[in-house]
Image (cartoon, rainbow, N blue to C red; front, side, top):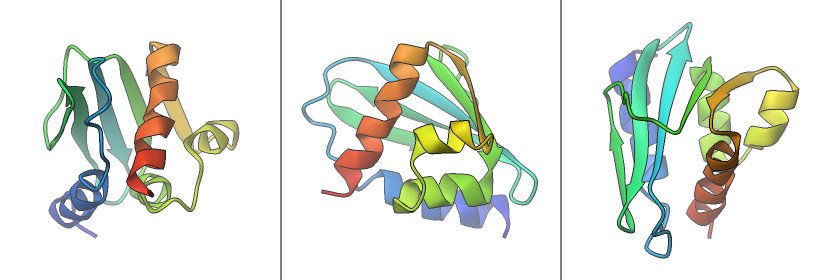
Length: 110
């Protein structure tokens, strides 16, 4: 899978999340390793969700993992907290805000 294909798919999955009730600013950078290697960010700002294929320097947290891991998380097949425990996902930055990422995934499935 190429990065462009991966990003298009992951963006469509994240954009399903209803973040209208989140008024806190959240910014996450995702570093994809291996196949489909690249970077993208997810930002919640003023109740709106943004997913862009760029590096985000003023991020709250940074996640590093494979495209497969991120896709499983986005599909609801892998809990992001479990992914960290399984060492499939590395997290750096503000842990409290990083834990809010699970909330975004849960909102997507509703």
